[in-house]
Length: 461
Figure (cartoon, rainbow, N blue to C red):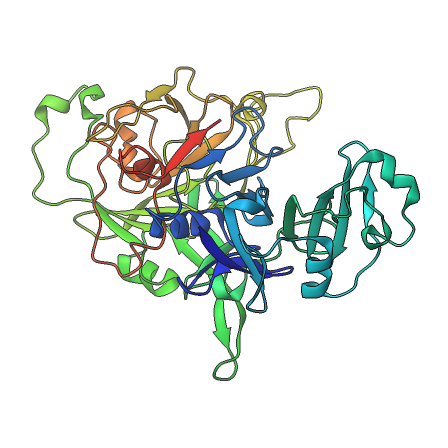
């Protein structure tokens, strides 16, 4: 049984194991904690909506521990921590237990541990009394016939059995109301000396895509032991050397070397190709949601990939969502927009809306990813559409999974698309090649772990 410390409006965690679920932390960071507790936290479920991934919360359910982690579907950060079965977990506040097999979480125990607060609020539909503190709520099941008699909260009620109600559910959140809770900004304690993306602007001119302008933030300090958020602006351009990119963005989370091209069979000259002794290589920046491909001979950037990290995609949880923004000239006139109005595309755009104003390649390339040890892909195929120097990878729900930019611009061919752009996943084998980077264990590739027989995570749409 987990023994956890409650900090209102902040976190739920283990002081003995030195981990905690913190409001505002990214989904991938919560998954990393769960993976580090394999054998202790079991039977994990991930719940999301296939059809409405931006309106339905992403939930990590821990049924064997009675805990539910609720993430905002857009920001993908933790907004609410629920304990829905108090009998499965030990809880304490300021190191003093208020819920355990020996300590019953009655109304008196809650008031003794947390102090006085406003009178409870009755929910007639659920027959629950809610006792609210700032950033913390307790819910007590109460018979509806007792509701009219209360005047000063639960403590003033007289129960026929003489026993006061016991907490059935607890919620930790940011703000004054769990219904209106929003995830706070990423806490400084979750920065882990990494760089994070606020926004990415695609830089284009008449000749095509030139690069990206990135609004970044990281942990900085004016004085020792006083961490604060530090904002930066950086640009990465096609033709930049790997040293230029590393100087701007820091060391990558991982380096992946392309060993083969699984799509070259689609090229009419594939049989004339000679195996190169050199290998193109990727810089994978997981916390930015960006990959940069460098030419094996020149070591110059020639391809940039932006990932949107939608649940239901094979690479979900490998990257943070890249909050990109770009504008393209329209090819078609619609009733809602004239021809001279640009087409704005973001990480939240849907392909069917974009395609009404652009003229992409009519036939997409079908991309099916699979693992080297487990060839099943429960999420199905995606579709890659070419437009100018861009490839849009589109999921079955019409949301964009990734956007790939090439330099120099060239007509779209199937051979241009190689799934190794997605964080080192081979389009056929799905294998992962890691460098010796010290950050390689920070972000867990949820789907690769879930496909393992020993995994403690299951994915449910």
